[in-house]
Length: 244
Image (tube, rainbow, N blue to C red):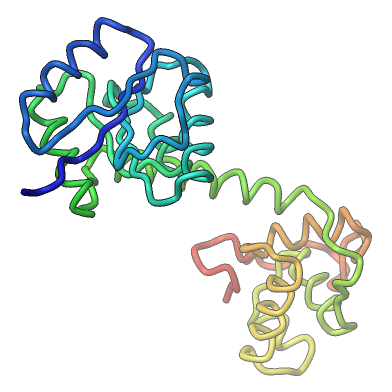
């Protein structure tokens, strides 16, 4: 006979706990080995295969519980219940170690199916999770771009004399082709220098490199080498971070 899946339930609402426990008891493949209405009361050493934790325990409490559980019981699986469709905290639960979730309006049978799938090491993902992950990634990208442009970089990052010269021309709005002509080098060589500048400063765009260099005193805040600061309008702000 197959050993039942040992499940521990955690929810603030005792009525829900009793209902879940009664319904799960009807399935011979599942055994409820513990319940708790308070995260502090959860026995992290209890030999449960799977923990069903409510998304509505309280601000940060559910995520903290999942983290503690995964530290103490890395092999234990966590299913989050009562998640709303656009709940951003779902990603916090996933980052903490949860491997599945049940929406608040899903029928109970979906919870049972997901419990069994997780126990068989099947990953649960949906268009909803993909959408939230994409949104989170975009936010992180914007935050990184802003912090990269504003924060000073490490003292041990130094530009060569040629890189500084090229960056000053970039500041004036010169294109790679114009810089190459003025310095008597190839466009490829200019692009290589620009690439090295971006790598050293850990930024993705020429304008970010100029802003960061000005902030840290690597180049002057003048009109640059061309004498008028006008260039031809090619400032490298297009889709190619290395410019033309």
